[in-house]
Length: 162
Image 1 (cartoon, rainbow, N blue to C red):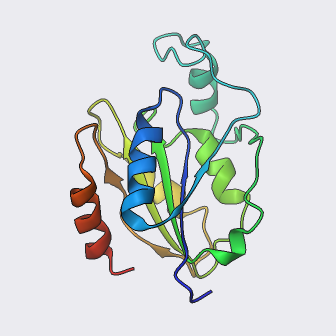
Image 2 (cartoon, rainbow, N blue to C red):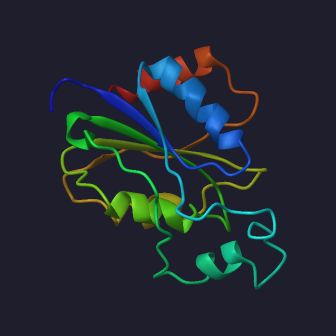
């Protein structure tokens, strides 16, 4: 710790969050890690209008923790972790909860960011923050839309004091 090494970890189904995460990693001088589900989501899985779809069932079950197929081997080396995801049902997808519970975030700065079709973060920050140890330096989440520029991201990063 103390080397201020940064990581951008993200989950993306449609590519929107992946694009934002990639740009953020460049702007922050951070490593990039894709949180990949053990079982990929199909478009049918993501149909939020279908109460029986995989994403609907996961989001309705607070205990659900979809499995992640890959791991960050050198996680302890990072001081700052940006965590990116699309907003589902006004919160982060359950796989983000799996991610936060899979590593020791003690003493790290955690900065969530999200993409959405227009909805805000809802209770995302309080839900996710609760999963982290009390020593985490939690920053408020930020919505990154498709038009965000690298210079806007650099300004945001500078404003975080990290």
